[in-house]
Length: 106
Image 1: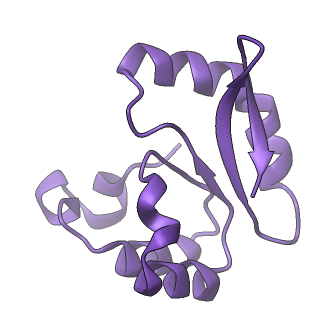
Image 2: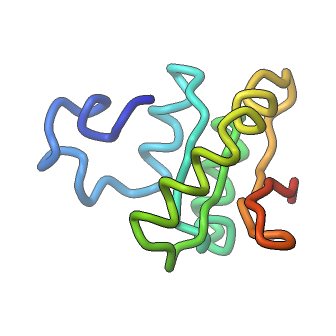
């Protein structure tokens, strides 16, 4: 797992980097993006950046607490790795289904 801090050298440099910039930067490393920014696919510039970057994007609930995120990532990690290995990039949303975390392709 990599963080924005690792990508940009320090937390201060990473904070405030526009999505349309960091999506392209992450794509150069062929990393899968795990994010809570569910609005990313509603903003035209960010949609264009995502399409240009051609990366895998896993969206977790924006309102999730730290405990919920740890639970969700732990429960879906195998699935995240599986979809990340696909040749064709895509977008998946983590959600609860019958009390269990799962990924759904968008």
